Image (cartoon, rainbow, N blue to C red; front, side, top):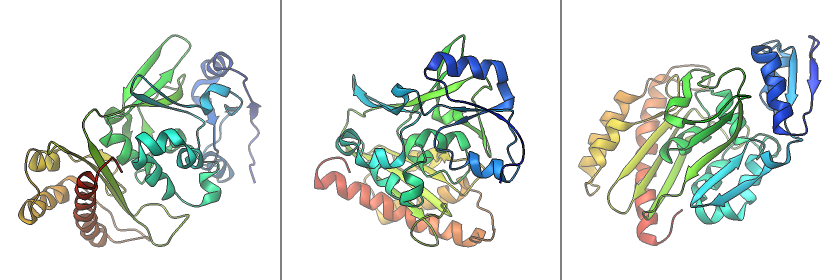
Length: 289
């Protein structure tokens, strides 16, 4: 039960929403899917004076692909990403990741923008957005700006978003080169589980690789040192082992009720090798998967 009183607003357009954010600032919270916010309010982790429900803003529900760029609106759910023909055709890696998020019930409400705004270290969408070099589109009453996903996560549950800004969507440029990707997630069971560890690999036919991880450090991150080891080289068992050692230096897993530090580290190596081989195999099999 939510015990603290708050004002509820459901703006009909972006201007109204941004004006409310400007008025209430850090004392407000934006509601899209609500799968995190409502729980946090019930547990008094979040006690906003104002809740701004943006589900009534029509254009925030859109998935667009124009000028070789994908734009995902702030209210697009994981289920809608799974069902989208645009995502299936151009970004199947996003579809495959979305299928691994929690349960069907959660996916029907949770949004990919909400996932990164919550900024938990285990955010499933983060590694995929990192390897695609996504941009976050944020708007205030005075300016619209884009924030690189590599600059987005500033700490556990902290982002580069200002209090008076509303995230309107995520923009991803479609890579011109033939590529394929794989997201490997370690969970205790199927459905409704946060990642104990996660790693995403995007492989290009010209031997360029992008690697990112979640749940094994304070923030999701690109593994640039691993990419440097791999880039420009044909993949071999020896190269994979060398890359694994660099990956272990990039991560800082913890032990908690869900998994030990040692188990997370070991499985990251296993999943990295598995995901890398899958991504490369899919390139040679034809198409982007």
